[in-house]
Amino acid sequence: MTILFLIVLSVVYGQEKFKNGEKYGLKYNGIVMYNAEYDQIVIHEYFVAGKKEHLWYNLSPVEKNAITPYKKFDFSLSESLIVVGLRKGGGLDVMDETGSNIYLENGDFDKLSIFGAEGSYQNDDLLLVKKNGKFGVIDWTKQKTVLPPIYSKIKIHKHCHPDSYIFFTQKGHELAIVDHNGDEVMSFNSRLVQDMYPALNCNGFYLKKGIYYGFCQKQSNGKYFLIPPKYDDISFPTGSTDFIVLTKNDKKGLYFRKQLVLKCRYEEIWEADSPYFVANVRVNGILKRLHPNGMLLLPNEQYIYEDR
Image (cartoon, rainbow, N blue to C red; front, side, top):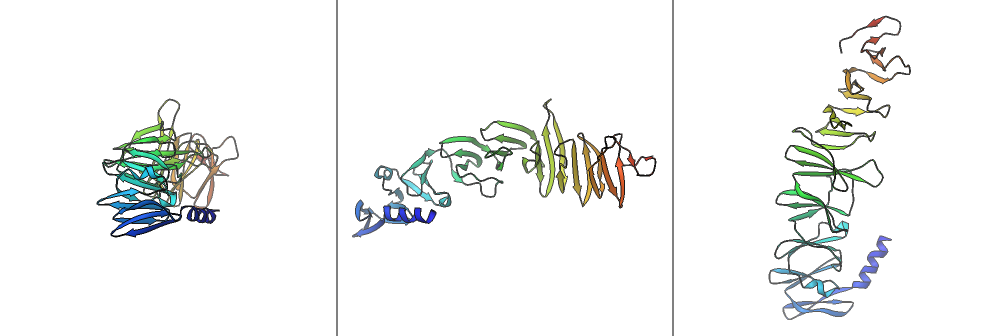
């Protein structure tokens, strides 16, 4: 389908530049649309740029679009079928790959880009914008600013809800999770956290610091349950944040009901199948059972208190 679309475009637009003396003009399908009055004409796939003196013009099949002078055109978003024009007086225009349709006119930004590696979710409708060294987000299809350009960092991640996404934003030491409507979900200050995104149980957020993981969940009272980002892995075997297994240096630890009850000293930890115990624990090849009071019970022995 894509190949057919490209062939059709080529047949429909059939750009051909011609020369008259020292100047260039442009034909579409053999018909002169732009007279030979340009110093240079460059055809970039389906987009045609004409240069007069030091300024460039959009020589699309829509002649009215050729009035606006540009400092340059940016084709770095061509894979998303977008061309960006930097206006003579500042401001950016976002147009389609032929220059016929202008989706965003005179946007008050210095630069536009796709998110690329800045997260784990790709949406071609969203562009990362930059102004005065700060980042924001626009939905160019709706000509809507999703996030104003006030952040030092923005990453986009897939949300747990289908076809939805969230943003991790940083402004100084203030970190926040913002939903697709631009509404803040949670925020706090940290010098350590470099990224946040939904946990696998969809009930809270992973924190990242380099290769290490932490976890954060906002409680109903507005306070935060926080596990600092210093673990190799954090998992939720039961799907609940009441039973969280930590991994560090191949050793396991346990948060039970949001309390650290076992540090990372154990080979295995899994949920107990008895209402009288919290978890099964294997240490040095020996199976033990964790009692709610924090004591570890050997299968055939008395309760033994172990310094955790």
